[in-house]
Length: 364
Image 1 (cartoon, rainbow, N blue to C red):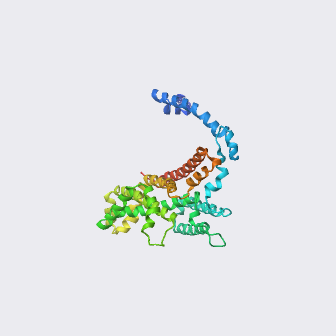
Image 2: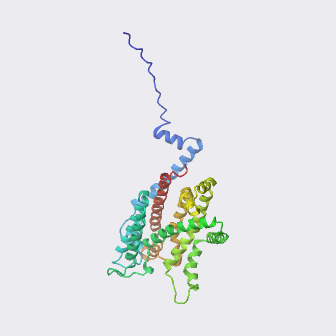
Image 3: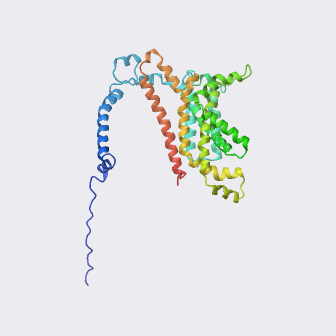
């Protein structure tokens, strides 16, 4: 019996080394054209000149936890300004011996935020967790129960104040913005006019002016002897400002919805509330996740503007630390610390937004 004929062997040619691996990536991204190659070389030369001195200043010649006097005799960075004053930078004027209370409150807040990131936890019980957590955090911050010292809001400062203004500004501003967007598209002239006037008026002035009005002008319209807490007034100003910008973003998402979606809801016999709640808003809010995230990031960073009305957020407590003659001249290190803090928070929010877009299949 004759054996079957052998198939001719095929020789597979490997791709050139300049097209795969590290060399392939470098060739396709950094050296694919002559001007990209020139730009890459120029940037590498600049980094060669800048990075070694920067690394030496930041890590080699620096001190990390020494008294202020030791920083006067060095050429590097004095990172000691942070650990030596970290208690005041983080907790501000909260009384000594009670700073564990805002510390626990911040940990609870972060735990709730991290827990809420998972869409599997988006149930009615989540609202109960937040309610219990917020009440507990309020008791820890203010005191008055279980023998805890009462701490007025004038002493709430530092990182807890920053987180509080940012969180409530975003959480309360978003649903208010959705309502304003729906009101602006309303067929009722009175509601539409009110929403348009509010949105355009708020968007036409900077946040600084609203903070000044809430701190200086608003008390002038109150009856004698009646006052509102300054922190609360600043919080309301941030919420109103954020809501106006969110309203325009959500309105864009509503206008992007095809007319067929509304007609399909009408054919099913759904009323206006059911149409918006079950069909239109779930789709529109998915569309506007990227611009909404940008506005919420701006809200978080804009909380630093409360320094102009003498609220001691984490930026203000850092500036007060630098006003101490012992630490004068080390503002670069302190502001780098603040920049890293804001970057980490904003990057975490941005990263969560991208994951949420992917989970909800936005854009498909």
